Amino acid sequence: MKGIHFDGDGNERITSEVTNDLSLILWQGEISSRPHGKKKPKIGTSLANYIRIPDTDIEWSYSWNSIFREFGATVGELKASERWKEVTRRNIFARLRAAYQGLVWRDLSIDLVAAALRQRGFMQKITGEECQGIDSPAALVHAISRYHKFMILLRDTAAKKHHRHLVPTLDIDLCWHTHQLHPVQYRNWCRRNVGRLINHDDTISKTDLKDGLRATSLAWFDAYREPYTTDDLKKEYLTTGRKVAGVLLPLYGLHVLNKAKKLGETHRGMLD
Image 1 (cartoon, rainbow, N blue to C red):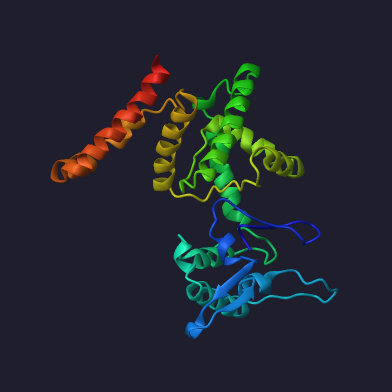
Image 2 (cartoon, helix red, strand yellow):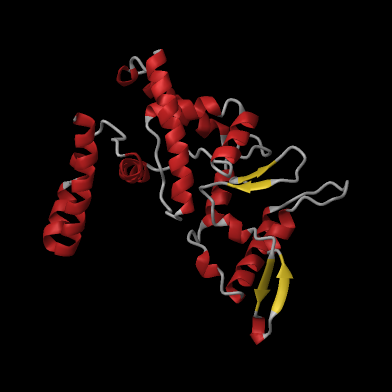
């Protein structure tokens, strides 16, 4: 399933950053349900038990009907144990299912055609005029340093349980793509430096990208006291709609002004 990684031997499963809720839905520890007022301990949710690779030589097959059934049972178990409220993305299963629709080959975990189209867009940007000189030795050394800082920021953000997308700039993304060309080394590096495997999700919407870039810029400035991007995020943030809403709703207006001020500080740091 998308968001879950199985090693070649089928024994190890790692949940990605994008699907943190899976750690609860696929919980393999004891879960104490209380149906009809009676405590009923159970080891692992129904869905976790269903997708676990069996320790036998019998060929294991799955079906959408069975996954639907086990997912429904898992929701019931989590509700009975009063843990369903901890799931922040209630439509997670629908998103997982949608990720599998329209695949060219049924055994693939992602839509390779859509992924190739996204990569084409990335390559057009990285080879465009805005990235001239990015392949110089000095620029690449600087990009690698920023990439390392970005991954550490991902680790620290997750540790503080800040549920927000951190968006890489093009130089950082170039290093990230290159690093993943060596999957074993990438996984080992992530475990050693971040504590878990980081999934590079490039299916984020344009709105989430803009929001994520602002959040990343602010988090980066707080962590390293240096600007993150040359984009004037304050100007992009102060849209006409936000200005009008700020006038009509003073409290919201104060929030907008405060955030715009912080974004301006990060950009001025770039200009100093």
